[in-house]
Length: 72
Image (tube, rainbow, N blue to C red; front, side, top):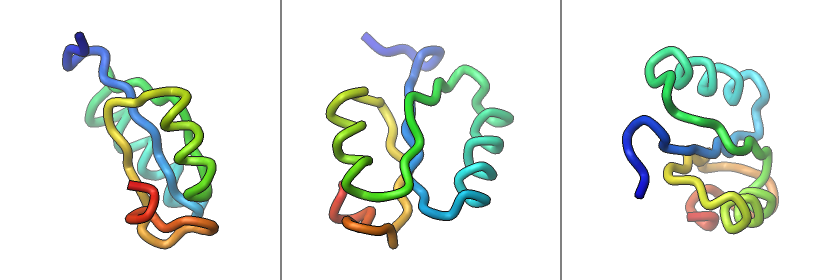
């Protein structure tokens, strides 16, 4: 069972500055949240999600290969 202290997340964002800003904000606001991966396209996000099984996905809407909505 996942508790609030061990939630895991994945960030999918193709803009490196935005991805870094989101990860930094998450770390500051929710320090217990563990990052399992960060991807810059929808296809890799699908693969990493199936492999890593994160609890939360942060998806950019417009990404290469597959949109955030298509990834979801």
